Amino acid sequence: MPRLSVLSHQLTSAAVHLEQVTKTYPDGPNTVSALDAVTLSIEPGSFTTVMGPSGSGKSTFLHCASGLDLPTRGRVVVGGVELSGMSADTLTRFRREHVGFVFQGFNLISHLTVSENIELPITLAGLRLDEHRMRDVLVSVGLTGLADRLPGELSGGQAQRVAIARALVAGPDVIFADEPTGALDAATADQILRLFRSAVQDLGQTVVMVTHDPRAAAFTDRVLFLADGRFRGELRGPTVEAISARLIELGR
Ligand SMILES: Nc1ncnc2c1ncn2[C@@H]1O[C@H](COP(=O)(O)OP(=O)(O)OP(=O)(O)O)[C@@H](O)[C@H]1O
Ligand SMILES: [Mg+2]
Image (cartoon, rainbow, N blue to C red; front, side):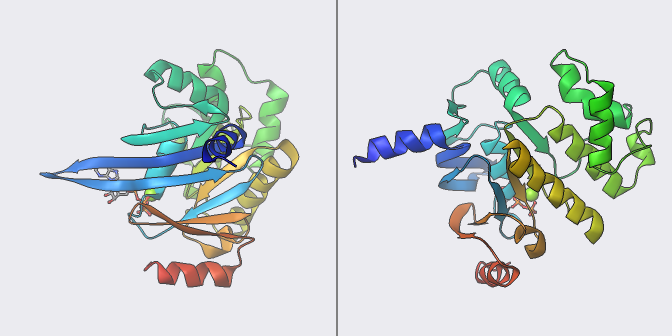
């Protein structure tokens, strides 16, 4: 089969497709490659983990794959739509409609309550969240009774769950989460992983998560490994042992 037709099928059928994506930053007189010619596809309705040593490009990968940032070179296609070349406004609208993001540091708005923070993507789209739906969302992330608190009145784990609820609330096609279980105790982390799993299984959403925890990664369908900004292989149906061995090879 000619390579081009394989490529175009991959581009349109993948939830997320990166083609030769490079992201460089200025570093004094030099440049640093946070991502270096990364090519990979993520299937719709899958739960994927991205792992690698600190500084290997995981957050940069999520930012480029979600349209939060544009690569220096290469193309990013989300749900069959090419992001490269979009204007900032079009990109923002596209993200709002199709993508949910859980940031490494929560990024909650400090003067908005829990429920206002969760509702934000809906409010920004000029809509309102149904009261019952808000109650369901609060229950699903274990935040019942905390709707009127401010972020400063929450524990780290509670704040993380608000960030997760905010990413889930508009029912995006793809949810990107940067270390979503990092600040959580084991029981709460399990609850969040199950929530992502049900988004994938019951709602057909696609979840892409960064984690340092092999136990969390083993809960997902596939692990992608990065080192020095390069894509360094993957594990499907990963086990804690196989993941740990691969991380040691990559020099974690
Ligand atoms: N805005 C920026 N300006 C300059 N360099 C950057 C910038 N963002 C990231 N980098 C560099 O790019 C590389 C990859 O960073 P990135 O944040 O993607 O790593 P990471 O794998 O998410 O690390 P961690 O596990 O510590 O979160 C690092 O060398 C980092 O210093
Ligand atoms: Mg990071």
